Length: 68
Image (cartoon, rainbow, N blue to C red; front, side, top):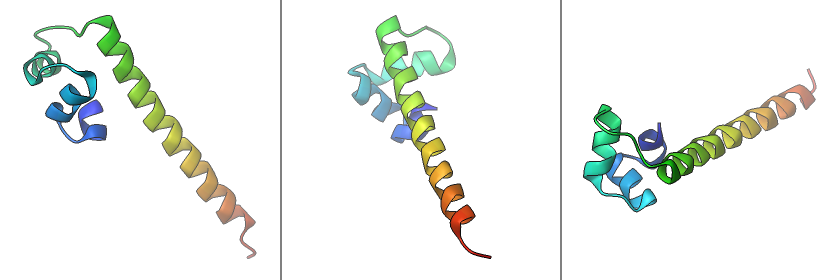
């Protein structure tokens, strides 16, 4: 999901300060990320999810305010 948010695995590597090879090994399940990398990814995904939920709430609120 981080690759979808940031664009690709190379962008994830840059975001984390890791190598593309490290990210590829995590993506394939050959290795697990260190806890600090993992937590940064969780924060990124959480932020994206919260922002999407807020946007959806604003859209619904505006739609509900529109006279029918």
